Amino acid sequence: MEHNLHPAKRKCTEENMAKPHVDMGSAFIQTQQLSAAMAHSNLEHMCLLDIDSEPITARNTGIICTIGPASRSVETLKEMIKSGMNVARLNFSHGTHEYHEETIKNVREATESFAADPIFYRPVAVALDTKGPEIRTGLIKGSGTAEVELKKGATLKVTLDDKFKDSCDENTLWVDYKNLTKVVDAGSKIYVDDGLISLVVKEKGADYCVTEVENGGSLGSKKGVNLPGAAVDLPAVSEKDIQDLQFGVEQDVDMVFASFIRKAADVHAVRKVLGEKGKNIKIISKIENHEGVRRFAEILEASDGIMVARGDLGIEIPAEKVFLAQKMMHGQCNRAGKPVICATQMLESMIKKPRPTRAEVSDVANAVLDGADCIMLSGETAKGDYPLEAVRMQHAIAREAEAAMYHIQLFEELRRLSPMTKDPTEAAAIGAVEASFKCGAGAIIVLTKSGRSAHLVSRYRPRAPIIALSRNGQTARQAHLYRGIFPVLYKEAVHESWAEDVDRRVNFAMDVAKARGFIKTGDVVIVLTGWRPGSGYTNTMRVLPVP
Image (tube, rainbow, N blue to C red):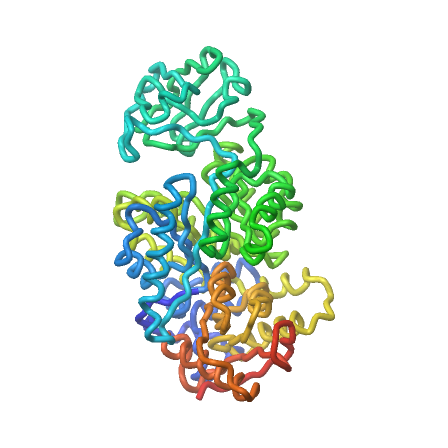
């Protein structure tokens, strides 16, 4: 999905090419983890992974960055795009419409600042993350940035009285869920801020609960509250969500990350609010509780994609079961060919430190190996001290992990699992991916109007980057959701000769891939085009040498 602007040095070490049955010739560019790639079993593949093997320049996994105070200036956003951000996420649990409108304007201004050079221009998508049926605390002492220390064993009054809404402190905490006292009892637990702080209910009144701090810590403003096991009766789409989604349609956002989706009906409710005008906006359902995991199949069916939101999920279900849910959701999304995003705490320690923990690095790599289409940063880029370093770190980890995928086995399984099809586009997509493995293609070039042809190629997880060329800006931006797609926006006017127009677009795609260091003269590329103009006619695959 992205580049770092200086092509990585590709070294093709002797041992990489040691296997005698692999003679790819000198033009074979994809040397990354090649001996492992040719293994005959998963165990052999792992045994052959080599730390001295260089990954290719292209990164296939999308990077989603949450934009907040640390990253919303145009200057920082330009650097974020250069470092590898593909999707800008706006979290509507915080901030006013004016604030978000300004952020969107800044993201677009930063994006368009690269438009002078069409080869290096990167489309950047805007994602609206809804507040959803979540419960939040109030402001600490009237400030969005103030924090108070809650001590273990202390008494904290949790109140519903609105006069404390903007004046919470270490003695009184306001929450925005009016039925709180109806769904908790003495002994119930209340978790705050992704479970970092836990409170035990001691007694309750009409509009308050007296709690004891079980796990203390420093508490900021507007933090999420979880009530595991309580029958929370909030609607899937609140009044605020309706206004936020309508604002998103007006602002022309590319996708919606819908919070706390529990069943298919919740997705339909979001779709209804987006209406006719927002019918092309992709809906990514965030799975954050037990019911969402249990009813995953129906949610997947109704959604355009899934986000594994591990923060809330790890409180609503036991933390040691989150990885099971993560692997199950990644697997089902990969099988269905729908994008899946792995999110929350990926490089959490980089909020305060310039280097991540080894566990975090492994976590990002394993998400990629599990089959994530995108990986996400939350506080790391929204409020952290090292937003650019966090993006660069994800970029570097993703490239290494992609090289270590056992592609041959994965492709076989995906092909076996997909039903028989008479759809020419799907058949051509499978053929293109298989051919790309056979000839070690440096790239797969797809000309696409709606994006569907590129999405189908992505589904079969080729090793080579998929250069998806489109004249439609939204198609290009939304393509970042899919593993392996490197969207390119083509702005030239349509040539009266369709065949000439196709050639021009293919050549432009090659120029972009060359400039990025994905391919060089003498490599081969796979080109996927249609047999006539328009959407839905992709059926022609060609193998071309790079001039």
